[in-house]
Structure formats: C-alpha cells, structure tokens
Length: 368
View (spheres, rainbow, N blue to C red):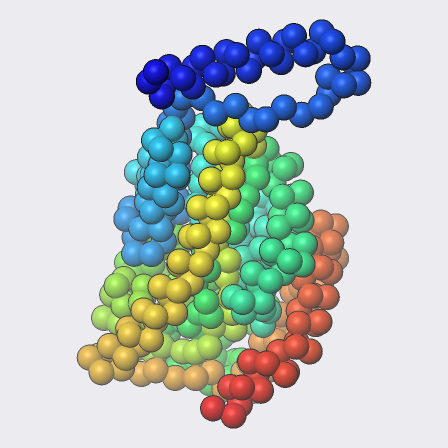
C-alpha cells in the first residue's frame, strides 16, 4: 500500500473510531483532547519585513526562516518573503499583519511605539540589558508572556527572532564631547533612545534603513545609528560619516521579532505552529552569532581601510545620557499602564541579573 493511501485510510479509520467512541461516553468525556492529525493540506503565507530586500543577516535570515519551515514541514508550508517596499512600505508591516492582509512580519518592536509605547521595551532599553540578558528575560523571566499579552490586543502573536548584540553609538558629522553637543542635532534614532536624545535637546528622526545613507549625505540628518560595523560598512556609511562612536548605549542588546496574525496562526495544525516557533528560536541564535563574528571583522576593515575617526563617548556624556534615560522611562511608564507593567518586570530582572554578572562575565572581562 502506498504511503499516501495508508495515511488517508488511517486518518479515515481514526475519525471513524473517534465518532464511535464519542457515542459511548458522557459529554464530559468528549472534552478530552485528541491527537493532532497531520494532513497533506498546504499553506502559502506571506512574510513582510522592515528590512531592504535580501539585506545581509536581517533579510537573509527571513529567507532562511522560510526555508527552514518549508523543510521541517516537508513542503506543507511555503512562505514568500517580501523586503521593505516590495509589497508594502517597510514601516507598515505591523498594520498589514494585524489586519490580516498578510500573515507574518519581521522587524523590531520599537518601530510600533505609535501603536503602543510598551512595544519599545521588547527591542531595547537605553543602558539596559545585553543580548544574553535580554534573551534570559524573554525566555525565562516572563518577557515573552508580556509581549504576547500586548500583541494579542492587535490580533497578533510574536516570538523573538534575532538579536544584533550591542550596537555602535552611531555616525556623526561633528564631534560629540559633551551633552551640549547634542543640542540641535538631527539624528536617525528610533525607540526610547530617540526620546532620550530629544530630552537632551536633539531631534529624533525615524526612517527606514534604506533611507539613512541619502538623508545623511544630503544633510537631512546630522547623525544616524543603524546597527554595527558589518551593516554600517555594507550601507556605505564610512563614505559619508566623519566620526563613528561607541558604545551603543541606546541599544545594548536589541531583540528582533517575528509577528504573526493571531487568527491565521491559530488555524494552523499544532505541528506547524511548533515549527514556526522552532525556526524563530533558531533565527534568534543564528543572527546573534553572525553579528558577533562579522562586527569584529568589519570594525577592523573600517579601522584599516578608511579615514573614519572611531571614538568612544566620554564617561561624563554617558552619565548625563543615563540621567535623561531615567527621566524618559519614568515619563513613559507614568503615562501608560502597560509600559509600567512591562518595565517593572524588565527592571527587576535587570537588577537581579546584575548580581550574577558581577561574579561571571564582568569579573572575567575585568581580568582578561
């Protein structure tokens, strides 16, 4: 008997037995869960991203996620990936998935602060946790549960699906020595970091990654932060940026997200749901690994092959920015109850994990 015929006959038999059994038990017994039945039904989904098409690591990672799911499902699920602007504008991905126009999206949750200010905490908090600690909060400390609770109000579910590791502080066309140097500065910087800049007297500009080079070149903005050496080099920022500052106080361990239309997800068989979750977790590990390796390689290229002046923010400047960050966080959480709930969880976890860090990584790095 051919495998396909066997599956069909077995499925029919299982359904028939289930029907007979249901007539022999009470109503209470009928609520017992039955095994998930795998069928040959195929699912064709669309995934929109906030990244340029096939963009290194970020766009490539989405392509890989689609391939992994296809392979795990033996072709039962096929996902077509669209870069920002190919199907819809990059920053309209959230609305497209929420409305059900497409099934999936990939981006960074702080892009959706206009929908809910609480979304920002699931990407990065200025002077917050690094990538390892962020993952610990999400997977272990209840972060994912809060994230799901928030996104359910938009008819979506979400999973961590990438992390860049600590970023650079950004590209500047003038020296940044004191907090006064930020006054009047127009900088492409999203999320809570952007609000900190505004508190310090600058202007935060939110734009898609594909627009940064042109805006910086034409003087529409005076500075920009994107990710780190690998992508910044690929984007050509070293051709137009004079100063490259570290560290990325605004994004010490930013998490990326896979967000999915809730109704579409719930219609999937349980095994496909698990495959999506597994692929997202794999992408989370893969992307962080690539960023860690390539950032080292490309920082050296910038140092050795260009005239860029690589600098470190002064301790005094960082101290001032941290004070502004505390004020911004107090303001955001004071105005939005869900932000207050999320940040309470985040802050407690960060405070607790610092104790362990004193005896683990920090102690190790200090002695290297």
